[in-house]
Length: 553
Image 1 (cartoon, rainbow, N blue to C red):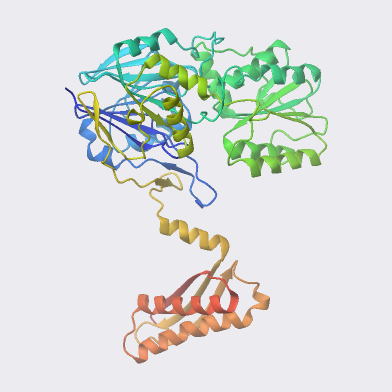
Image 2 (spheres, one colour):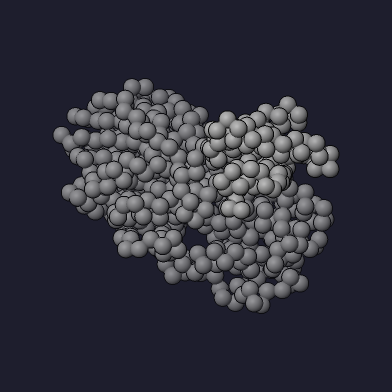
């Protein structure tokens, strides 16, 4: 029998950075390559991606990468991976267009991106891989079933069960899922982010019934509506209402305008050109227009705040505006969202906010997950995607449905589940993983030391103490010059600044006298001495940077 190994390089006990790995007979298949956005303590870091070390070390065995849809937590780490290993990417129609553009934008050349059907069977390196359509907020979303002689290894992708979904690019085929269950599923991996919610997610993912009455009652006025950039299903709902009432539409974000063009290219959606207002023709004085403002996470609320403060170059808030926040406030965005609402209320605006408890994100609730367990009938169940409490609750749900605790695997990132002869044989191996933090276009691996330095700078400030010495004699010939930022108000700290300069001079003179002068060692000694002095004097531990310039005089 073939040997099967399953593990995650990201996405377990965290929100985002999703990457699953399935090995069948030494052949490696990657499912998703996403990023996650940092918390407020990860200063200066733009985003975090998985540790690719294992994949790079075994790049000859990597046969394919499957990208289920075009959301950042699923595909945005792909350029960084493809710069390290050249491996074919398999994805759906709409996603393939966006992935190709992303790779081109990031300078990835010779990438092999294959467009596959949502219901497809392909053979890669002798292994059969099936895709099956699933309903999510992005069109062309699919799940993956990798065949082995121990049974299928199935990942559902992100999904909900919606019996009223009529659009082909969003629908799901439950009959197809049950066929895998009849043939035999070794392991099923299901996402866990919505497991705390009872019932089905549908129909509470839809917002038409909530925003249509608002738009209908404000037909002649201007409406600003905010929505997350990648929730295309929700954006289509908004557009449908505007089209129904023949209301002019202005798309604030060029990125969204481009995505709508791609949707039209795929024949998935069409906005009548006579309703779309071009940026060159848009005027802030226009009435009877729906302005769609899109973005990601905190940035969306910051954009809305800029509009409220009249700091946006195109759209400025007017007190007669009606504002709909169709992007429910989620974890990590509360501060920015609250600030935005305050600014709008200050200007006297009318604001309607959709409640995240009322409008659900398109992730599976308990009954959706139960449906997957019922259809696939897996021998082993592996909760994925979510914080630990989500994984635990997902595992508990499987137990409640009669699955044995021995057949439910709650793993850590890097923990390898190994199967042989249709049975789990080990979960003992743990791959060593370190998050890769990106703080700029190509700045890799921001270490803990760097983050600690940024934390110190943000809280206690910096003091730079500089002197110039004769290059040969080491005699002090100018300085000391002391500069501080964020340490103490200089007017009140003349003595502190003077003392810091004296300490650096003393360290240099002592080292020269004792014939042990070394530029680096003297600076380290001065740093320690000045830091101890500042802690005692000010109760603060700023970053101290002594500078000794050796001058050829």
